[in-house]
Image (cartoon, rainbow, N blue to C red; front, top):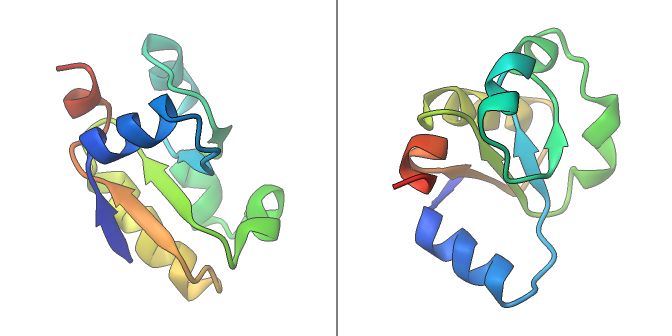
Length: 98
């Protein structure tokens, strides 16, 4: 697992770079603030329900949540499921909205 910052991701998105973003928040949290990407709640990941993103196992995958804690846990779990290039978005949406 790697870590990336809000500044790095914002710069890459502003430059038009296509990124694989994964939001692991629950549905209600996603409604509050959303930067896009695939939505796969942490509860699904913990139940090995990753089919929706299995095609990204060898690609860079930037994982985010509200604060960065769940996304860090999700990255570790996804690595155990065979994902080889996961990035935790440090600070999550709390940092993004500053």
